[in-house]
Image 1 (cartoon, one colour):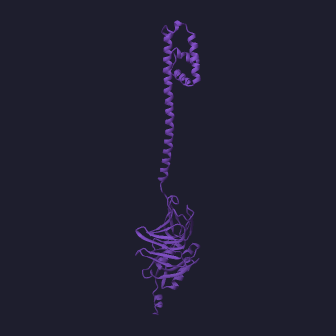
Image 2 (cartoon, rainbow, N blue to C red; image 1 turned 180 degrees about the vertical axis):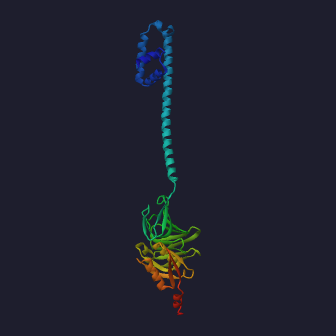
Image 3 (tube, rainbow, N blue to C red; image 1 turned 90 degrees about the horizontal axis):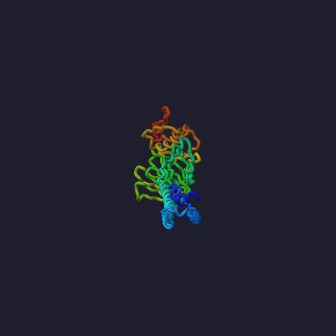
Length: 336
């Protein structure tokens, strides 16, 4: 550094050397060394060698040069301090921006849906993200989004499902089937809502649920355990009755209870249970049935139906046609 000091004193230092010297002079101890170098250098000179021939003039020039250099150092130091403060400011601003962007990213997470289907002839058991359990009857399906249990607990149902819902008072679970919505906090219940069925049936085993209609704001009905609510999709009326709930929920153990269902409704259930196509004549579709299906085959079920009602089943390729058996009808009416 002594060589650079001497070059500086003789005004021969380059720009890079002056910057290096200024950086060195920021240390108080180095400025003492600088003064020592300056005195040694001045003593080594003859008076004739002094700039402008005068030691006094030279001292003024050196003082001016040093003051100018020191002023530049001060400005540089202040600039660095400002840059440090600015760096801290922009760091904090960046952190805030990252938090904001991360928060917005969470809020703007694209929504996609999961669809769970129980194949015909099968019963599926599903565990939802919130821990709730769902049993899906054959030919049924549920749909819920990736926001389930974080932003909502909304489920769309087609078909029949039994729900055992984890309780969450702040985020109720809502099952939507057609226009009817079943709102629950934590409970066990069964919903039957096949697209072709004329009714949406809800049977409550435990807890409490509330029925809503997304098209009618005033529609609201709370169901008690042991009750069955049947919503007629044609006339939009709700009928509530006390029932043996096991008759409507035992299907999840493989047992189907047919209770006062028309042949049209029964055929829909047989379709999804046995994956069988049916055609129903207009003159028999309103015949009603009540019986229980365990592990019987479709042939056994049809023989039972033929034995207790005036119908005849005819197989055509992969489809079964139900039509009126006029002879059986006359027998039932006592005309034979």
